[in-house]
Amino acid sequence: MRLLPALSKVAALGAAAVLAATALTACGDDSSKAADNPYGLLQPGVLRAGTLTDAPPNVYLKDGTFTGFDNDLLTAAAAKVGLKVEFVGTDFSALLSQVNNRKFDIGSSSITITEARKKTVDFGNGYDFGYFGLDVPAGSPITSFDQLAGKRVVVVQGTVQDDYATGRNLDPVRVPDYNGAINQLKAGTADAWIAPAEIGEKSAADSNGKITVAAKQLSPAPTAYAFAKGNDKLREALNKGLDEVIADGTWTRLQAQYYPGRPIPADFKPGSGAVAVPAASASASTTS
View 1 (tube, rainbow, N blue to C red):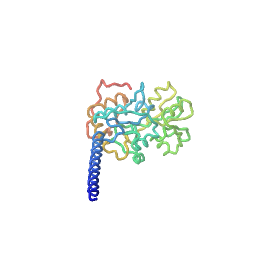
View 2: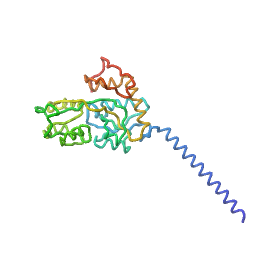
View 3: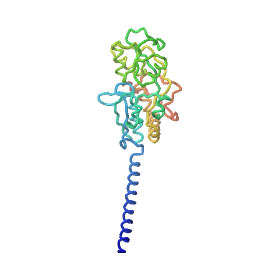
View 4: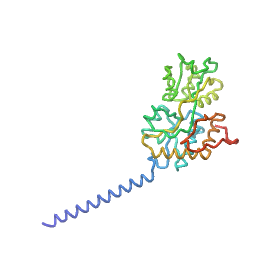
């Protein structure tokens, strides 16, 4: 009769030892996972980037490959911290919420930093500047942003160009992507498109004379990559990688490649601003 309590005590001690060992193993697994994936990526070692397919020269598809200034720069910066980039196409209107919901690790789409957007995502250091462009159908009498009142103005939903038009009470027509805006101009269903100037210029050049650039003006803030709120380790790592590709001349080379002849504002300093920006070489490529 006295053996039963003793046996129960032994069993209890054994169960406790098993539980302790299980807990230690679990902790070991968690530590191992954290070591393998220090940036909290959807897939260790792979940076899943949300981007667009139709916005050259910034972000676009060419022969089935995502490219453009923003995407090529991100690929170079990510390589500096040992990451490969996997690009996935999406609509700009959904991009920031998808980044914050962790569908993507990062957003790459010439995203202008604004106070409103900071409520949804965190931004890395600015890597580019830009201009607003005003694209119009060929033969249009519109020559400036001041002539848009009462006109049918198209913008891509959720962009700073959308904010600009709304802030000036233009009641813009919103479309989900750049192709939608271009098609409205070509069809004559819009009087003007307020666009990122580089994208607007490339679209006009590719329109066979159907679209022209009427005007452009400097955008009020730099562009940067977007990160989920609180993902500071990834943001800080990519900021470091960005500084390294600025220092080694990659940023300068890509500027010359994708924006040939575009002057850089004297007060613009990419990245942290702490590294010197090499001058463009005479042999830099000017193809995009």
